[in-house]
Image (tube, rainbow, N blue to C red):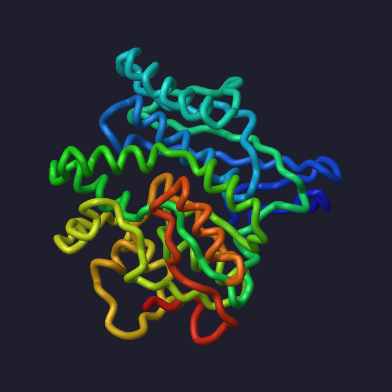
Length: 311
């Protein structure tokens, strides 16, 4: 069954579904849930909420309604459950979204996330499948969350690196989204479970372009490169490599640790923004005023050879 008001569905693997309500308003809807990746329940709640909210920001929308989705063991301490929910509430309040309900079931392992509804002008919706040849790609958060959460479980991170990691994952993409919407951005997506290469692959394939990623231009979280060199790579990174398989190729001598980071599954990663070259420098400068880590990580060209080239 099709509906002409469904602007974005699942066919392009986009960040959320978009439904036109009127000529001036569209509903953006998404849901995301995952098990704990950090020990502190409040931080876990913040990260899960920031991750769910990010889908709306990636499409240029404003989140307004949120519903908790929670799985909890019967014997889980009530204060832990409340801390998880407080963390989610904290991020939703910062986003200007209202938690208006939710659903809870019993499970052997805690899992938390949210169903988010946001709104945007239907003519300004940003898709992950509309990059143009000549676009410059800008990334707004540092990479390495999957590698570092794996390392953190093994007590390999310094306290400073661990805190930087948590705060990066818990931070909203709200500011980045608001800034990018001032420019003639062609396409955007947020970098989550498929990693930088995976989400770039979706953008390139949906847009019919080749995206070149420059490995030495990547913004990295503290100790991410060190841990990658040590081989602290989560299983999901290998899954991402296998999924993309022959859709990506390396040119020249590329550092293995950097490519591992590029395939690393991210939690609550940054926005990947495709913008015309003539506006890229000004957008980057504007972003850096609030997000110093924002970096140019690649560019799009007419399709040739493969969807993704890694240099």
